[in-house]
Length: 322
Image (cartoon, one colour):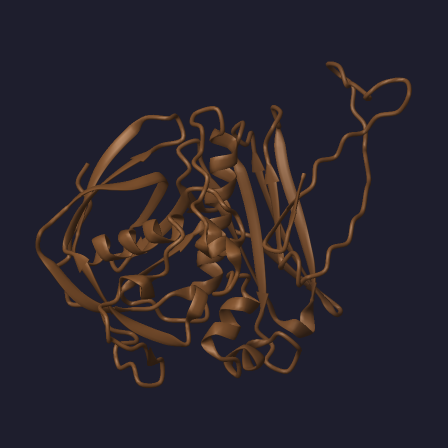
């Protein structure tokens, strides 16, 4: 159904000349299949969307013990909010493999469950030491973040028709949250962070922001409808060209019109650092990178020159008001 570097979706339709194998009440069958996708095209994750009433969803991830795997899970609800799995993984070690098992009963219709893993062994390709030796932009590329120069970053993202495309919106939000989790494991984001759908290869109008206070903001079809006259300048970084930082002027308060998955229109006011983070991501959905908003004559500085890593911008702590 979808075949892009940053995202693949496979739909299975089992049928022959006699029909599509319907199952009726009391009937059951096992269907086994295999597929292979290069890790460079589809990273270390597995995802299941609940389309039919399901009594129990269970999985087992069997990974090489020598790679020192770590596994976690993310679930999205009908409101498109992401949260960790409510029950932990059971971990079993046998010989040269580690098995992580997880299950849940009566998963909700349209719920999405995503499992991700990483390898901590620094002596294997893709391990921690190899990642540490990469430049910041190379780290982001390795994590599946689209880099500057890709045409998708300069196009206006396509809006969702909500609620008709609610399932597509949930899927994209799940992808964004999962990618944000992976990125947060290799870099400190004391100021907060955000990811827009074009940055993971999906040209739709969705973005997710995690504030400095660790609040997650989901933005669907957002647009800025008002902004304060007061403006300040702060250094920003962008995952799509993460080797540099730039001084960017932005309004200290913005009002954003956006939607939830049910198609309801919301207006939220953001201030301080939250306004900067949200504005940065909305720019992405309009095909803009922050360098286009810098004042004339102001140059980018290398990340080695930047002294603000691990520190907040210094705004007062503000929460969004709806």
